[in-house]
Length: 161
Ligand SMILES: [Fe+2]
Ligand SMILES: [Fe+2]
Image (tube, rainbow, N blue to C red; front, side, top):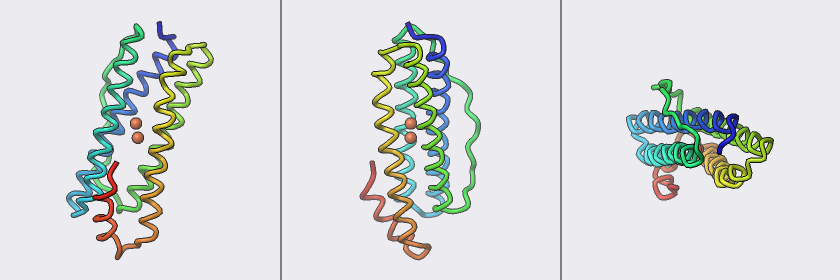
């Protein structure tokens, strides 16, 4: 049986992963309208992945005898200041998610819930990869500058995942 506190934090995580999915979908749509097909494509893929993360949490909570709830999601921003600013937001958001995943892990440790401690390792690793892939894009954006954005966008098409 999932400890109450762990169940609560897993449900909080369901909302956060679902919001991440919608946030990246909103960013993808905005980038697409700006003619940034590569970046939009990368963000659409991220949106799918985040939905997958939400599903993992829903299924895990139910599997452990808890009750997973699908919440309402707040609307993500419709407009962004620019590609660079948008990716800074993505990095900030992923760092926030990392802290949030660690909260679940720490609650599981405190409650000696070894099953969750073990299960959530996948997310711990995933967050390292996610923060890193966003940092790589930010580094490329710094290198490319405003004028290189077109080529960077084409570069990202071949670097999805
Ligand atoms: Fe996620
Ligand atoms: Fe993520």
